[in-house]
Length: 254
Image (cartoon, rainbow, N blue to C red; front, side, top):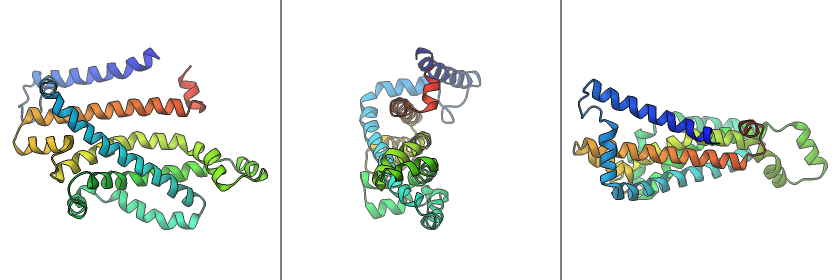
């Protein structure tokens, strides 16, 4: 357990050290790339502002991610049981996935107004397709013999979903969540900067970029990175707890 926790820490320390050394060795101009030490010092100096902003960004990204997951499980249960509906839904999901969301953020802000609504909507919408695909594939991966056994005991559709299909889809959903965490934070950051609501880390980043405040901008980058790392660590802990029965978790715990 100690070694598992130590390895990511080593990776982060090495990465930051190489970054710091690169900036200092090649004398990179501050407006191109700031040294991590400068950004961290600024972040610590104004930590209360960044903590308040980070809490807003966490709500936008994680609530949107949760909404996307819940919708995806509901849609996935329907699509996994009907091939026609799955084929009909695929072009729509692919369209959401491939169209650059940055292109229509401003329209969503005009539609939903300032505040949390556009951020939550965008995070939910953009993270939804990957979760739906994972839900459908995971629910379809159930062994036919298992479904026959559930049918033989006259299990209801809800029991089949909760006892068989969802546990089968859970590993894929957790893997997809790892990707979607970063995507959700990026979307929340950008929408916060686009809706001029004066909330969230994205608003700090937008203001810093507009006023050419390099330290403030890179401090916002560091703060969103810290939020992402913490979110991924908590997700890994949740995965090990929920999927303690899964073969991958048993192998990792040895």
